Image (cartoon, rainbow, N blue to C red; front, side, top):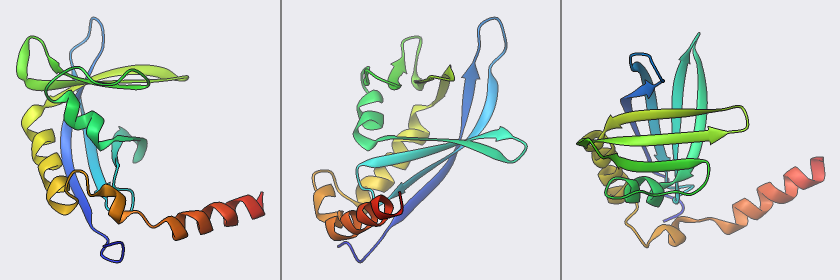
Length: 142
């Protein structure tokens, strides 16, 4: 399976929630690759053609569709006041951001990733030899 790389991409609109301000729409590209089968990347377009990339567990995103999930830098949960929306909270040393987005759009994206790499089969998609080689090459250059 490792030789059959699959990539899933989807563009979604998230809303940045700030205190005492109207929500700000932000385009986000969600991507998933079978080369890193446990992870999802969210690329937030911040203007001036730049992006901020966050990588987090696919299971975290899936769990957050139905209940509060995450205890660290990424937290996902259904909105208490609107079950058709999900909250995504991101925290880093440089700041904190709270977004909301459509539960359905995230669910559709996740369904496509599970069609590509079914749950519990992620391990069979990992290429440990390539990862070790990359690690050793990086270590040798440092």
